[in-house]
View 1 (cartoon, rainbow, N blue to C red):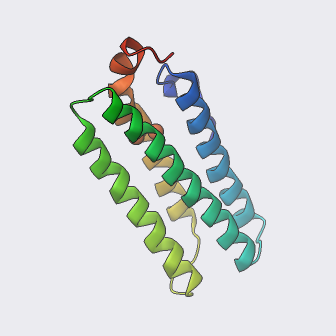
View 2: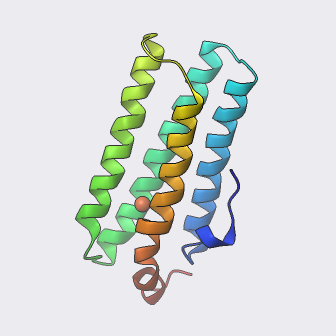
View 3: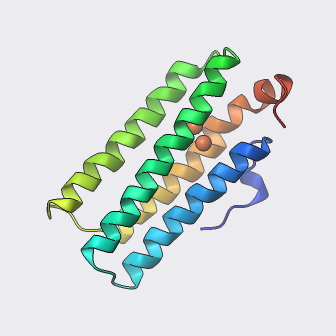
Length: 132
Ligand SMILES: [Fe+2]
Ligand SMILES: [Fe+2]
């Protein structure tokens, strides 16, 4: 999965965070493909989960700061994704679920769709508020 211009939200700082997020998803995919051990996969998953939380908080802070009217529904999407990832993390650590191509596809599709359909809606307000 590559970042491309059609994923740009028009704010460099946030585009860079999205690029890093995609990098971490690719890192997890590569580790899975290479048949890395459980500990490596757990560590990589943890890195992805932590960065996701960091990124969502950064967006939420700007949304609140700029009084974004769609903040609540945007945050609901973030919270649901974090719950999904942390639930999976727990199930994986406890041996109830494995890392699969289906899960990788879910992560990639979610991030791509969320950026395109939900994140891009704040672009105009963020730009107007001085972020570029
Ligand atoms: Fe985002
Ligand atoms: Fe978002």
